[in-house]
Length: 357
Image (cartoon, rainbow, N blue to C red):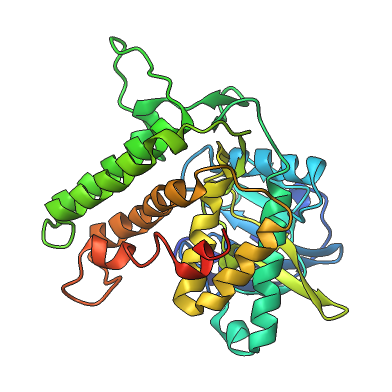
């Protein structure tokens, strides 16, 4: 069966395979498919049929990826006005492609992950989009849970954070029947994961992640320890909330998020933590965009006491996740000779954010 290469991950796919996938969900006659040139993992293909435009998402990282994304897409669809691809339909079988797949509606709007799209936006448009992201994040966080935790796809429920699992997430924990699960709070998860990932980066390269870097992080954790335990209502966190994981449209000169996706990392915790990644990305692009995003968020959400001390720790966790990934793959993330503190220190207390407190 001949086909076309749509991504390195998905390999070659024939028209007949696309038709078979559409048939699983009675989604019409196949018209065309389009490769997606942006994105890191290459899991998605745009597919058009006589019943509409879809995204076919395949070859999951882990068996639980698609059920987890489906769970959180359902929550957002049912409890908020946040636009997500729904229905999110999963075929768990592998007879068509050799892997399970999802068929979901293609959300309308500009793909901000596409560099060519970004180039065409003016400063006023970029500011409007940043504000839309702030408003949308506040809406997402209307989904709450009585306790912080992660979705267990096997049991189809949210469970409290367990230390051993969180330290190696998303990989499975080595089985040891003699060890009792250690349930931890959200703040314990944040500090434990921050330390663990930072030490892992140190093991890769002690010249770029130094002992002084580790000491600096410990000082910031110590400064924030009491406010990390400040009471909060656990809400939905995406942990990878950014322009690249959504689409936007403009109506009556006002920008709005028209679709949001890639929910594998979602869990329940302190909503303030999800400010970290978009603020960091906007600081890289233009600090004024970070300020616009934050101000729009604050119109809908109130910060709890201690934010100025708590936020640096949340930002450090976000930064070390990326830092460790780049160190592990020997990729360049910053100028040669910089250490983790040199790079991450620029994000922990940005004036454009802290002046609004």
